[in-house]
Picture (cartoon, rainbow, N blue to C red):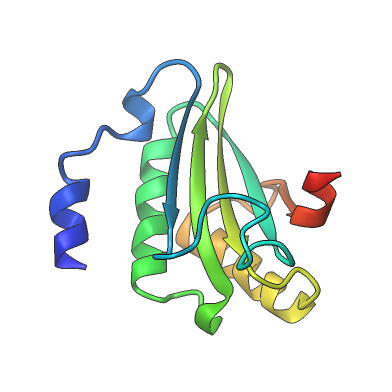
Length: 132
C-alpha cells in the first residue's frame, strides 16, 4: 500500500486531464479486458459524473479498494475512470455478475464511499452484454 501511494502521489489526477483518457487500476494478473478469465463472467457498476467530481471520487474509490471496504473477498477485479468531454465515468469491475447479493453489496458500498446522492443513477452491465 505504501509503495502504491508513493507512485500515486506523482500521477496526474483525472480532473486535470483533457480530452479522452482512461485510468485502469486492476489487481495483479488481471487485465482490464472483458475477455480476461477473471472478468469474463463478471460485470461492472457504471457511474456517470458531472465534470469536477472525478478526482475526488477516483481517490475515494481507490482508498476503499485498498482498504477492502467492499467486504466481498476476491470479487473485485479493478476499477476504471474515463475522462470524457461532457462527463466522466467511474466503473468498478467484479468477477461474478450472477451473484446478485454481491453486486448489490458493491453498489451500496460505492454509494457510501463516493458519498453519492440517493438520486445518482448507477448502471450494472455484464461483460457478456458488452462483448455482444
